[in-house]
Length: 164
Ligand code: MN
Image 1 (cartoon, rainbow, N blue to C red):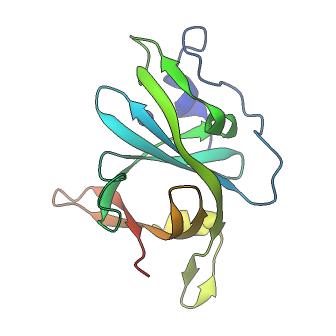
Image 2 (cartoon, rainbow, N blue to C red):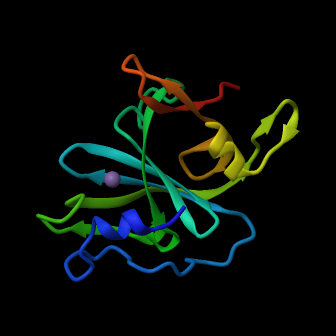
């Protein structure tokens, strides 16, 4: 996971988004953030700290309603950790132009497992089956991100809240 793709899409002399890889904070537990992004299509960017980057997905709809419904989560490029603090306006003509608001933020615990054994977050991402315990303000409890193949054979992710 690197920031190459992230950097290649942006002109940091024109967008206020962060360019560097410095860590936002020293915390014992990894962070997650959800940013509401008023781009050409409104969506929610769900990002989790994995090593030195934020692994990222765009959730087009349903995060504010329908909390138990399965939601499509489109994998997007890794973002710098510092991005978890970003709110502001990406200028017109720049990649992702539009307002970005922090919608939720918190810490999480990787609770992924395979065959009854705990596995690392990176392994869970590779396997396409991630279980997270989120402690945010709005998102709380167990969530799963899981691979599936859409009808065109394309690999997509689903974002699912576990029912209590
Ligand atoms: Mn976005």
